[in-house]
Every structure is written in structure tokens, then in C-alpha cells.
Length: 318
Image (cartoon, rainbow, N blue to C red; front, side, top):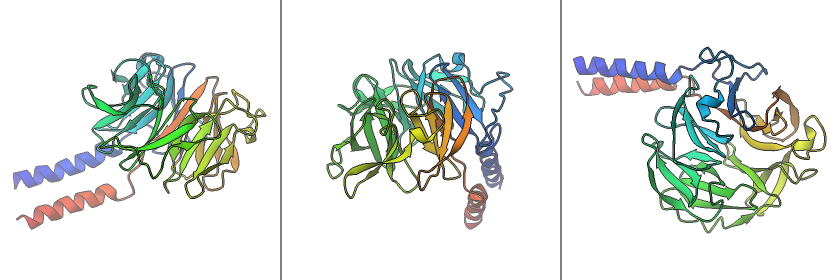
């Protein structure tokens, strides 16, 4: 009976710990290359003050001044893993405090593996797999695209889309074997890639920055025709033409289904997640922004169901 009681308490404690975070569950986290800082911002456009720092969510001392490029959230401890020109840093997902550095050298992008216990980062050999807990390098998943830490990635199920910073090709590899998916092939982009992302339907997107004009923005890939089309045009946002720096680095789809794009000029711009129509600027800061991320929020009742399932399981074992 004691073990059953402790199991129920453990389930409840897990539910409470998993749902705990500073601010709103829908807040966005914005990453600045120019300052090496991380900002926590509400969807209404107000920055959340971190009680630990007295200002931003994470300071340059927390990120180790790596000039963040792209980030992801999750893993064993639900922390932020930030890839940058100066390395890859893990910070606490609730406090923003420095946890550890993983690997050495530049790593512009990072993705949590399908197991949640390892991660992929760009390194000098291509895409390396690293142990989340120890930071030890396990193996080279794949080589070629985006060597010397400049690899860009997006995990989707057991697949990993791989490109390179300012590269115009993207491939798809198996996260377990590293083998290239030849049915996807080597897809050419009509622009130089800055970031890769997928939506909830599995559609693939990539951002273009430096070409400017009619090219700068977030593009969507159509696998049926093998073609790319402009989805969210940079020049629809404030300050003009879409020429650098008025264009996108990292981007993501928010909890409301809209597309949020971090522009190098300092704005977080919102586009309709279905049509790509420009909605408006959510927030602006005098910093070179490179990414915007959200923490995935469990579906309502998910932990309650988990708790009930655990209790039911205990009852069956009586």
C-alpha cells in the first residue's frame, strides 16, 4: 500500500512540476544575436521581468555570450538549448540560468532527438549526436550539408531535415541510421536558407534573408510539385523592402496557430499561420534577433488522465 501511495504522490508531483513555469504558458522566448540575451515576451507584446536577473529572461553571462542563432526547448529537464556562433549552451527553462555548455566550437542549430535523451548539433563533422545529460559526443549522424557548425536542422518524428547556413539545398535523414531519405532527395531552394521549420501538419518551411526584395521571407515547400513558394513576405512587415536587415532569421508556429518570425532588425512579426498574411508586429527591441520559440504546453487534462491511468493501474494490481 505504501508503494501505491508513493506512486500516486509521484504522479501528482510530476504533473505539478511539468506545468510550473514563470509567466504565461503562451509566452514567447526571443533570442538576440547582438546581445547574446534571451527575452520572455507575452503575446500582447510586453516583456516579462525575470526576478532572478531583474530584467531579461537570460543575460549574456547565462548564454556564455555565444551570439545565439537557433534554439529548441525540451529534453530530460525541459530546458532551452541554444545554438550560436560561439557554441551551444543549455539554460534553465524556468529561470534562464546557465546550466552547461555542450561540445565546442560554433553550432548554429540544435534539435532534440526523438528519444528526448540526446540532441543533434552542427559541429565540424556535420551533424553530431550528443548526450543531453553529460554533453558527451556519441556519433556523427550525417556529414556534408552545413559543415563546421553551420548546419541547420528540423526534427520531425524519426526524420531530420538538414540544410546549411546560406545553403540552397535541404536533405532528409533517418535519426536512427543517419541514412538519407532518397524519396525526398536533395531538394534545391531558390534562396539561401537561414532556418528550417515545420507546422503541425508536417509542411516544411525555410526562411530567406540576404537576397532581399521579393525573395526575403518564409517559404513553403510543396513535395507534390517539388517547388517552393513565398508564404510570409518580409516586406509586408514594417520598415520597407525586405532587404537585410529587414528580414527573417528563425521562426516558429505559436500556440495560437500563427507564424512568429524573428527579424534581424529587432521585430517579432506575426503572420497568419494558414494564409501567410501579415498580421502585425508583436514586439520590438534594439537587438539583432535570430529566433523565437515557445514552450510546448500539455493538452488540458493530459496530466489528469495520466494520474487516473496510474491509479487505475494500481487498482488492477491489487
